[in-house]
Length: 170
Length: 103
Length: 348
Image 1 (cartoon, rainbow over the protein chains, first blue to last red):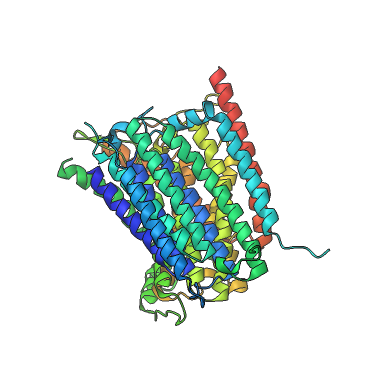
Image 2: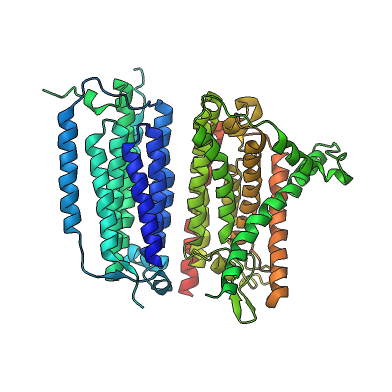
């Protein structure tokens, strides 16, 4: 039954990702991606990663995409205008590239019959889905990575602040 | 009892999402939507990583995805700051029109 | 899973979702009477005995008012936003435990909607949906006051969410688990140093409790943090263009948020459903635990109401300054303090 849920959530994610790419209005695109990310979070839970799923919702759907929405709304970005000088070359070559790429990717990704364990088995102390086990790893084996990422976040914070600041009159 | 989600399902979905992201990044002219397609590609990679992590019974998939989400947040913040600064200058978000460095 | 198991699961999930809005009706009356009492006036006392029928009358009015949708509004988002607000408000209650795990006739019934392994983080995830409901309301109304109110309100919520989650991280650190059931179980029994006090989290983490409670005011858009919907400044903020029952939905969502925030405060810092020295058994134990949680929640709701009608409103820059420069450092200091306590406890 987990497969049914996973397929349903994955289908929803793909559908709304498609809507995001095709949509003309940037706000609608962002909102379609939000729904897609919620569906992906459901997929993550079924892949025995509930902590990552909830982090995906908090960080990705709940912070990054809200930031996108803020920028769109504050700058009053309009709909994408149909360009006068149409570039058929770009569309044709781009579509060709996508088709070739997708074909290669999907052809390459056929794995063996490995299956994913069910959630109810893996939840439990030290199971795959236990947040405490992940946290223990983060602060022991991956401590350097953790600290490096926090420095990176600080750098991004300062950088974003400097970049988006209005130029002050001297 | 062995689980019921085959890994190939997960990889198929991940590949499809990634291809949709590539299509968005190549075929859109709106800078915001290109950026969104890139975020979608990162999520497709996350899905594949988690799929392998669960199938091989290791925590490493989740750890990598944890860091990818954090780094994506940092990148989104800086990217949007660049976008805001650019928009103030050029008043357009059509990437075809941002061509001052063209020969 | 037998049919009975499914019925029990359905009851655990659906009953709180039905009962919470039912509690909002008397809550509105309580708010108006307490407000009147604080302001030295009678309050609604004409409609029914002691004015008790005032709330049903108001709801009837809201249902029968004309429902306008602005012509230039984005219709789909405009209609979606109030629904999202109510959805988010009701969903948050799923992880609050209202009793111990009952053992009735061989069935083990946890008195909680969903005992997630990532319990507390789920609340912050649901807040993301609440932010969207406000931002979408502001944007889709196609009205500059609504947009300003929407953006201000969501920026406020995101800022105070940081302080709130850092304060809650102190509780999680002390309990060693995200599950709210574990957090409540940890708070049972007497204090180790001062045995007449219960082992509630508020005593070691008083500043964490303060930060959490003040942030809860900001998260629920209640005074003194309700500038985004202030009548004098912004017409009505993000719900300017909403009338009749759509406005009623936002109203309902706000009161449910108040109840849930009070329940969360009671669970995280004041022992939730547990009473020091009482070990609940069977159905009677379950009912008593429920009443204990209800009493604690009611106390905090009264504090919400009391503060609303006593304190003046914060200006927006004062609000942001408080959240980032005062509450967040205080929450971080609290986290360090809890970490120190844990190390001391482990070293003994």
